[in-house]
Image (cartoon, rainbow, N blue to C red):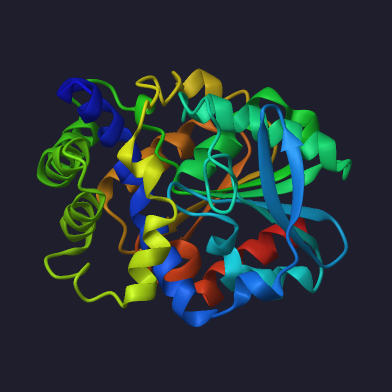
Length: 312
């Protein structure tokens, strides 16, 4: 794969993957045997088979994970939300334990948004509360824009809507620095066929030297279960669709913008723009948390989102 294509792919993917790498690691240690205890269901959506779990009764809440995550990313939310709501946590196409399709050519937000809209319709649960994190939040945002009849409320945990940044902007500069420092070295390792080294370089580039080496074996194994998307095999170089302020203005459903108190500034800049453009929004900060909002401070995350859902 040409280095320019790799650069574009990792430039977009790695920024949304950080939290899911950590989330999967944390929950793999806190919820040993969880996969065995949860009875997963399967549903064919478009050309992909998706696995999902259901808990509780009431108005439906669908959790949408980010890159390298899967339905397990939301383990810290299931119990709290299912006391009042019908909670649905699914694994997007390409993610564990879904099969890897023969045609894996597109990882774009648009493809996943189309899947999510079809998934909601297939479940026949009516309007849903969408709770998305990172890449999953961008997916949820597109569904709310294009299929408002499916969405009751929208919670966006720092969506990487980089198209909102203009060229040579502060946000664009921050993203490019991150890619040059962390992503290009890991991309080269993947290109050379060394998946573990690519994952190690990426993980340490994001979380600091020695972070990957400090993981237990089960943590590394969990990361590898979703590493194929990070590798960007045959990845769509147009992974993110154009999205401007005029698109955000079309999202009429009530929206909660969630920030991490310690999150990288590039995510905060996106939220600032969305706050200006969305017509029906509110905003809150999760204390003592970076971009990994739902697992770094699950109690604060759950309390804030549950309060929002109760109001809408």
